[in-house]
Each structure stands twice: as structure tokens, then as C-alpha cells.
Image 1 (cartoon, rainbow, N blue to C red):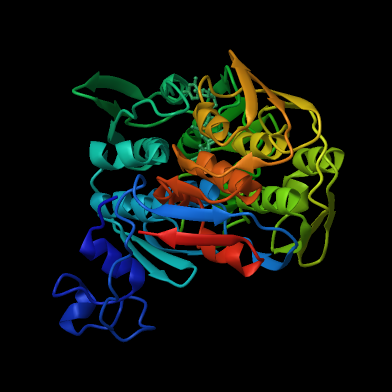
Image 2 (cartoon, protein in one colour):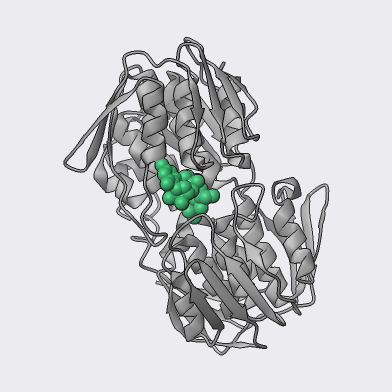
Length: 464
Ligand code: EPU
């Protein structure tokens, strides 16, 4: 990714040349910090850069703090478009995806400042309702500004996201559901142009419980006139987190977290302070790490009630996992049994857990059949696991994984966030060294990943 020094300065709460207010000797906007010079920018220049070396590791122990959920905070940041004033988000993970969303908000005229795990977002009266291609292409989740922009500004110009390693990822449900509220779209030169003088509540039945379409619709419906009902809504905990922030902003949303969400539109919303829920996918990743390595680890702040199905699966595979007042306790002897896995919308086993589970199955006893039901693609990391000696066959959206005692370290490439995590998990059970390139993808979704791994005993080193 390319850092904008101006944005980085805002996020780091420091002064970058003469570019921001604090550099000219004004107090920082929240009045809490005197200006200080910026440290050098992180070396992560793109998701494809950066490498990790992983060596066999066992007997893990200690505690891992689980950060705020990436897939929640990105939408909460988009929701700030809905109300003028100063919003404060706590428990915000330090990820390149968060920086990218901040850059998008910045491009629209909002001011984003980071102070530790707290983001302050100032939403001025006038904003530019446009999401440029450069940012949407970098992060697909940018599409969630569409609903809030249409609801609050009445217009939006958003670049159409392209496909990725998961295959073709359409946005037809986002557009159709917003149209049913009264928005009108045209598309040209790779952009969608949307207009809506006044959105009107209606009943929408989604063809599939799409997370992004549910979020866009929810953020549009809160300011629509009348009542909107979303049937077959996505039920992910991140949707409930978004609804909880919207309700505290003054919205009237009932049923988020279930398949039917009812929204009574209101005329205006006000800014709030909100704490992001913990990242269940980061927690799942550390469970998988403990599963293959063996050991006893506590995931601080993790919520077992957001990961019931996965915890059941990992129990079947031989792990012991319990909720505790601090988070989740996990224990494994490093000897896993195979199981079959089918990805499903929440509360089913998430598609984001699948690469982690496939990596676990490569060293489990027996054969596991894995079925992907959410994305057409998302098997690319499998050829990398096969390069490490894994016995995996794919057929359409199924993979048959026959466990072997140990993999063999090799140079491999991460194609996305979770694929990168799967390769780290595999590297823990591979003889010799596993050199993972494209490790920058991990920084999009995991905060201080290699540091947290080292803290519990994983032998991992980051190379430029
Ligand atoms: N779909 C359509 N049309 C649409 C929208 C979705 O056909 O208009 C299809 C998709 O192609 C896919 C399925 O519906 O086959 C589900 O997609 P969904 O909209 O639920 O996914 P998303 O909102 O684009 C979020 C997460 C993903 C996670 C999926 C599924 C964020 C930023 N992303 O994506 O997380 O895999 O839900 O749970 O919230 C990740 O964190 O690495 C990640 C990719």
C-alpha cells in the first residue's frame, strides 16, 4: 500500500511537515496531545511485500490479547458518515485495512486521528461523496460507504470493486436492495453513480445473507422515511455490533443478529463513542496455531459465544477449549483428528476459518472433506500447502485433505489474509524453514501477528 504522509501523521497523532493543523503549533484537535514528530513510516509498502520465516514450534504457552474485529470496525468507520460531529471508536486494531478505510474517509473530507487503540473521526457538514478506484481496489470493504452516503448526502460515486482470489465478487444485492429503498444507479467508466432524494422504507428479502449487502442496507435504512424490514439478513456478530452503534446514534434497529431486521427510519443521528467487538477470526487463528503446535494458551478478550460452531469442531478434532472470565482458554496436545467441514453463513463455520482448518487437517489423523459454500474461489493457498507436502485434492468447491505426520518447509506465497495465516499454521508443523512471501497481506487483518506468535513461543521471524 502507499501511505499518505498526511494521513499517517493524523493516524499516528504526530506532526508531518506543515501539512496538518498541529504542525502549525495548534493543539491537536482533541486537545490531549502536544505535537510530536512522526516516527519513520512502517516498512509495509504493499500487501505483496514482506516475508515471514516460520520454523517448527511446540509447547506454546502464555496469553494473546485479541484485537478489535477488522470486519466490524471498517463498517463502524463508514457509519460515521451518517452523523456530523466527532465520533470516537475504541478497541480499534492497528491494521492496514483500517488505515485504508481512514484514507478513504479522509479523501471524502472526514478527519481521522489515532491515539493508541482509539480512533477519533470528525465528520464535517460538507463531504465529498466519492470512493476513488485506487482505494476501493485496495480494499473491497470500501463499498460499505455507498449506503451511508446515499442516506445522508443523497448521492454517491463509488468505484466498482474488481474480482479477487475468492473469485468474482458481485455487488448486485447491495445495489438491488438500495434501489428498493428508492436509490437510482447508473454506471460508467468503472464507477457506480447513485442518487436518492429521500429513501423510503420497504421490505427487502436478500437472495443470500450477504454481510456487506445487509450492512449497506442497514446504514441506508436508518435515515429512510418509514419502516424497512430485511429478511434473510446476515446474522454475523459484526452486524449486531454495527446495529448497536447505530442505535446509540439514535437509530431504531431491532433484530440485528437474527435473520429479520426491522428498522424504523429517523430524521437525524448524532455521533457516539463505541467499543469494537473482539475479532473472532484472529481468535480462531490463534486457536488453530495452538491446535497444531500443542500447548496451553489464553486468548484475552476473545468471545467464545461468537464462535460456537468452530469451538465444537475444534473439540471434535481433539482440542480442549473453554470460555473464561478473561476470554478463551485453549489446550492441545498437538495430536489432531480429522473432521469434515462445510462453510456456511453465521452461525455456521465461517469461510474465513476454512484456510485455518485446512492447514490443521493437513497434519491431522485421517481424512477430512472440506466444502466451500460462500465463495466460488478461495482454494488458491491449497497449491502452496501441496508444495509443502500436504495431501489435498480439490474437486469443484470440495477439498479432500488426508493428514500426514509432518509437512516440509518450502518457499510459499500468501495470496490473501487468511491464506497467509494458513501458511503460518502449516509452517509450525513443517520440517525445516517455511519462507512465506506476500506476508504484507497478514498486516491487513492481524495486528502485530508475528510478535503475538513469538510471545507464546512460535519460532517466527519477519524479513523485509
Ligand atoms: N454476493 C453476491 N452479491 C452481492 C454480495 C455478495 O453474489 O451483492 C455473494 C458473494 O459473492 C459471496 C456471498 O454472497 O459468494 C457472501 O458474500 P458477503 O457479501 O457475505 O461477503 P462480504 O461482505 O463481501 C465479508 C467479510 C469477508 C467474509 C465474508 C463472508 C468484510 C470486510 N469481509 O465479506 O471477510 O469472508 O463477509 O463471511 O466484512 C476477510 O476478513 O478476510 C474477509 C474476506
